[in-house]
Image 1 (cartoon, rainbow, N blue to C red):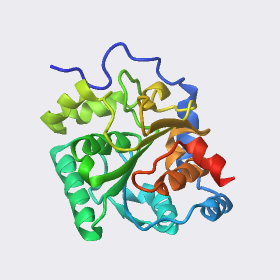
Image 2: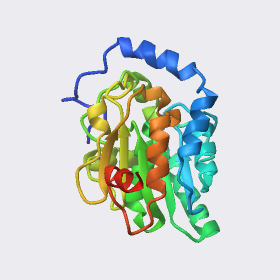
Image 3: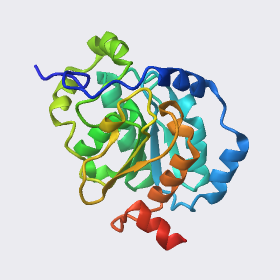
Length: 250
């Protein structure tokens, strides 16, 4: 049987003191002035649909600030509507693909996928399966490469009996990138996931971008928001690296 994502030969666990930082950051509200500044700096969007997926053990409410930001940028943003993310269950895997099809049919356009933590790993696999329906993929501190390590491993193991048997086959191909433009946003201060496993494979239309801040705030990190806005504004078929995009804008 293929070993799961938390298997052997993993990198070091994030330092234990970072768990305290993550716990405090998770409950701290985002300053309103920071949110307003990020919105003010955002590029105007083209209205294409964007699906936002929450992190492990989180639901749509936690992603509301990011969805509001994406909506303010001018995109047709949607929550995933599948409740709390407990991992790749049959209901979640079928439900997220159904949501993708609904948005494609509704808007007659490809959908951009944004996910935080495990909520980025799940749509990444969907993008591999359905590149025909995906405009681009943006992951926020997501464990998308093996090996990885996380203090959440015991909880993931506890819930694994409810995960789809088909999801175990994913571990063997997790390191393979999706055939869509992909941006992996990561932080070396990550206290939940080994940051090394949040890097996307090098290649055309793929890059990894570092920001400062803890794992738990990546979905409301203003630096991450600026990257999200810039990436969403990339016209289909005319992708360019983030640094190049910023230099042309300045």
